[in-house]
Image (cartoon, rainbow, N blue to C red; front, side):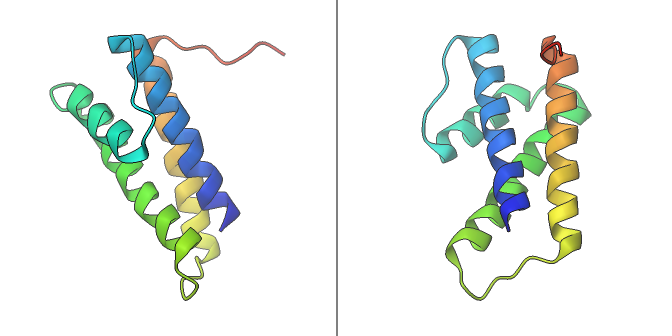
Length: 103
C-alpha cells in the first residue's frame, strides 16, 4: 500500500513541476493537477499521453488503497505502480529537461 501511495505522490509532484515549468502555475488539488497535466500533454507525443494515463490510473489505485479497507494491493500491483512512477518521471524529465540532483 505504501509503495502505491508513494508512487502516486512522486507522480503528483512531478506533474506539478512540469506544469510550473510549462505554464508557470499548477493547481494544488489532485484532480486539478491531473486535469491540467492531461490538457498539457493531450496534443503531444504518445509517451507523454501514456504517462498522463498512468498518472490517472495510479491515482485511482492510491485512492482505493488508502480509503477502502477491503482493498489489499498485491505485490505485483505495488511493483506496477512503482514502475509507472519511474517511467512517468523519466518521460517528464526528458521532455522538460529536468535533471536529477547531483550526488
